[in-house]
Length: 328
Image 1 (cartoon, rainbow, N blue to C red):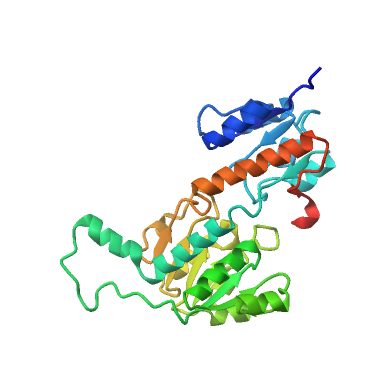
Image 2: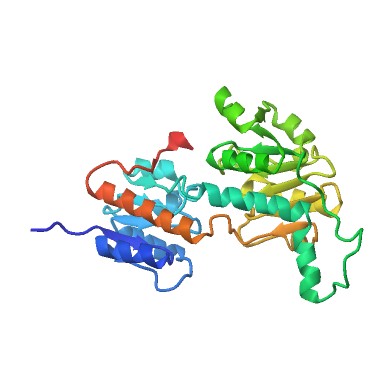
């Protein structure tokens, strides 16, 4: 007699190939529209499912986990970041957590470089002129940006994505510097031609461009706070494709408005979709709607990882991408 299929609840619409494969393998409940689940809907899903497949838009905290049913044994997150999930409480309740690391490295690094180029070369300002129909021809001093070759790039967080940014920046002729919780092995540093700074303050004060590539943890919350942002050179640019909470957004907005920082490129925000309206008004700021991982290939590969994690769990083994509190 065939065993009963796992009950899987997916909280958001996923790419069609991913949903089709999930439906073939499991007893899956798909989302009829792309609106995030309400808290009560999440609680209901967690009471009746064996596996929950959430995304970054679902906050799964201790209070919500307390409402989970006895069946829930795996939270197979669709995404690499798990700061929206209380992993420690889940573990205490016997619920495993998995994620999808690695597949978005190149996509996110590409976006970091795109933001650097966009801000330094003033691409959105040029685009706005063309869209308004205000361009009346080339001029020697119009929309002068800067050359990125030779500039010092300070990477905050030198994991997979940070290293991918370093390789791209080197190809553009930038000088690569980095600060990380742990220093890279000497052979990796040589390969990346990267200079390590033990002091984040000292690195920040000397860079032309800062790229935020560290995860969101209690220790990285407002790592770029008002005091540290004031260390930046007036001509410096900061880009963030990681997590919005790493930067004090209000302090950044004040400094950009005052001309104390030359520009910023942001794909993530401290308060989600609630973005400081003054930040939106600035011409030296490029704002994107969390597009760092938005490639067809990346999203399909995320789904494949989710499926592998669930299938491995169903077969009685540890999911290959299991997350434990000591990793955070």
